[in-house]
Image (cartoon, rainbow, N blue to C red; front, side):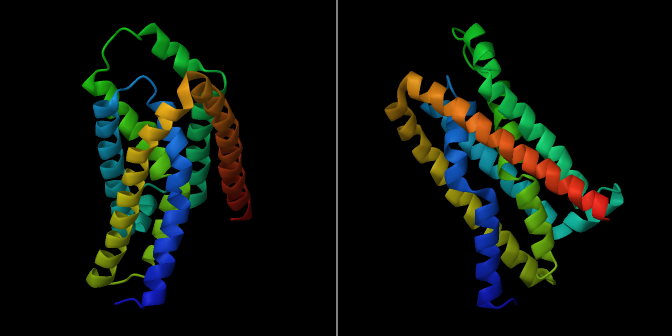
Length: 209
């Protein structure tokens, strides 16, 4: 069984790479137009999917990537491009334009499921950074008991993420439409920078390999 320091370091590493506080405004941005129940469904599904993905990589991440011949740097590049596409839509309000066209149409279950899976669960929760950290940490958690402990740490982090999503709804009521629009654009710029950093780190690692 890993020591307390190892467990605590793993918890801090995974929590920081997921960054629940940083995901709160992004959650508000991608769930604009949804009511409380719909956001609740999205937050639950996104957290569960994110947990399952990260738990899978905690147990068999290195093996999965090697089977397909995928390296972690390549995964970071791919995830960075996905994040940049999301950021582009946020900055230029392409996402909002689409939602305005269906503003009078009820949000379907398929839409809720899609948003929960992408972009919330992947790549915002279980993104390149979180998955990379999980795979790297798994090297220090060998054996069934140790792997179970790592999966438990991931579960705790995802419960905290879910709680942040639940509280994010209250923030939405305070911001109002103008505040949400400004926040969405600002976050889009920040997300674009993060996406470029993901790609740059991945390319640098690929070139060094």
